[in-house]
Length: 324
Image 1: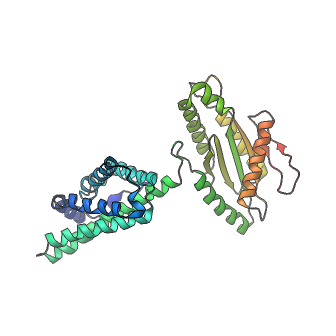
Image 2: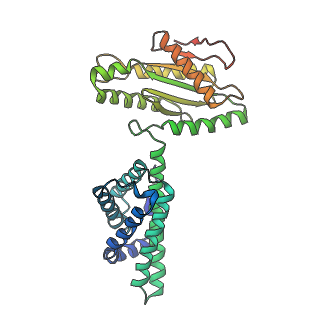
Image 3: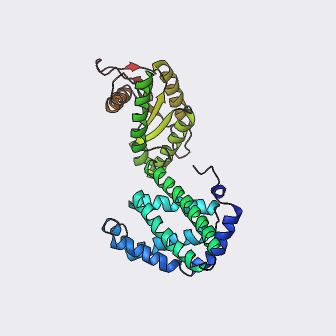
């Protein structure tokens, strides 16, 4: 996600301006943060996000370090990326919506700009140059934090795959594309066989390892244009654009075999998955397509697991074609 180096947005001159201004800002940052967090507490929509004085103090300390050690020190490096990631995910976790975060950045930027204007009151050129550097750094940082936030909203935290929300959005996009261009689209449900027994016998940490291994295997086994998401529990879904039933059979069986070849040392048996495959029919909704894939998955489970089944069309009899 962070392939581009953040420093490309700042010139050497701008970095020097920020690094010169940073110790000056250090004398004002605590008052700025006090005002900022007091505003959050007084605002009814964000007041309940901070459950205790300790929680508030932790958030304040994290934000102070982020601003002073990284942003206004112009140190956009590995530790900065970790800081951005932690802040973005923390805000997503507590429910701090992006619009509030943007408003918060605007408030911080206004307060910092006042310090710039006061500090360089006798040097208008320095005022303009430092304000430009401050604004660029703040907007860069805000963009990255929001990017992390959005990624967290659409990502399953355990496996790193897209989550149900991601799947719903991408499926609607792919359906529109398939309908518009009259192209095939296939959905495959994968379910880990006897997963409850894994959790009950070996414990949830081992179950989590199994989920991560299956997720990695599916992600590495699909094509570049395909998508995979964790649907919930031990279920995964792949979206296969431009894929007809014959191609879906080949890819699904390849993925099923790849999962069976995975070795988890804590288990005394291989991990296997069952799969249900459904090919989109013109005019079909996302709900119907997923329901048919789920039906095919159920039939695969009924046939003994560790196999794949192809769903019938929306108006066909509720039987499936057995893959293997």
